[in-house]
Amino acid sequence: MTSSDNIMVERKNSPSPSGAGGRSDAAAQLGGEPAGASARVDLPGARRADPAHNPYEESAPGGAEPARRSSGRRVAGPVSRVDSVRYAGALGWTVWGTILPGLGLLRAKRPWAGAPALLLAVAAGAGLVYLARHRQLAVEFLAQADWLRLAAGGLGLLALAWAALSVVTYRSLAPRGLSVAQRLAAGAVVLCLVLGLSTPMAIGARYALVQANLISTVFGDSLNQSVTLPTFTPGTDGDPWANTPRVNILLLGYDRGLSLGRTEAQGGLTDTIMVASIDTKTGNTVLTSLPRNTARMPFPTDSPLYDEFPRGWYNGYDADNLEWMLNTMYHNLPRLVSDDVIGPTANLGADAVKLSVGQALGVKIDYYILVNIDGATQLIDAIGGITININKRIPTDFGWLEPGPDQHLNGTDAVQYARSRKADDDFHRMSRQRCVINAIVRQADMATILTRYEAIATAGTQMVRTDIPATMLPALLQLALRVRDGQLSGMQFTSGENGFRSSNPDFALMAQRFAEAIAASTAVAPAPSTSAPPIDPSGQPVPPDPPASVDPPANASDTQDMTDFCAYNP
Image: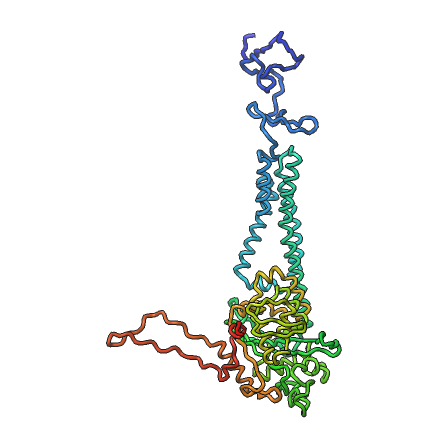
């Protein structure tokens, strides 16, 4: 045949040492052309090799690693199911894929799972940044019990999903043929990642449930029914207090006298009666104390309690009767009048004290917070104790508190320091109580609150009762931050000084003195001028006018800067 198109090349008598179809030379063993062939010729009707078929990547018997070859050389070491990702690379991508969810799955060429995970992670990060820059939204969230419970469940599901994502990422990238040691090491890394994710989320879920329980227990709707609550109109531009220049909170320390053998039926005494008057703009606070044995406490003339007690909280003939002192009103008054004497209320005793103390001081008391003194021990222990200065030896029920600067007290000793009357009178005790409150406010920093939050919240549910509505919590949390950064001053009414007598107080004078203390706390010195001084016609600078002075209160000795008062000065 002479046609080149039909030329058939056939080698005959070619020896085949390996038998029919065998290939024995080196080229054949490497998958190349038979020795001696200068060209490859396709025979008519011959089956062409499938380009996608690579017989050299077929698994060896028993599932062994395929004998992958490149350029005649075997690739060393196990490689990923995806491509050439090695063992260390798989671990590295797993770590990055856990820190930034979805990134490792994208590397594993699974965009259908990696892309949504990555987008969700970026969105969540942007949301956290937004909340950090809009603190009011975060505070409002922390004050909603229902939202907190949903957040707790969401954190649990997120922890499971994130942990599963970490495992799937490693499985998608892990090479075949790993040794036992490599598998154990990889498992340890993935386990650490899973625990590192799930532990903080579990803590966050736990804290969310604790916070929800605290809000429901202390600020529940059934606990703040009161005709004495103010009408609150929130401000705008992110300041809820823009329309409320001042808020007055009654602080009651309730002592059941368990150590004295008093029974629950006998009730307790509010031996600590304070009012915190807060400037909502600056956070400056005046903290005043009323003696527990103050008699003849008045009621507003427009209150039904005035009709019941027109001469005040007084039996009419004995101002020294211990059952008619201010500290007994909380427990005794509800037993002498009908439950609805002032209208719907969840705590008639507290409302009566609010109305009476507000009338005596010439202000309207907005809210009350009653603290069980026995529970205060747990609160102070929960924040790790407090550090105060002790200026004299204080006797307690268990021994003595020795004088000295920066004395760190646990809950029991701090409460004993605040309650002791064995070496001092009521007035010194009221001063020490304000020092304890000042120490708690100043020393309960954010790190302490976060790390000890569960204990603090648990103590709070056992020791606090209030009429503050849960809806007010976001605004009050903002105000608490201002109080912490503001200036705290204190004053007290001491029998025999500045016209005050516990058995027969001059309530008009008390209101005047309290107003003067508030005015002193809000007075701000004018800011120094930064402009050039004016020049008179002679060319000489005109001396500046003396700064406007702020007159101190008439009874300046009543007002105390708590930092100075509580300093070490034996």
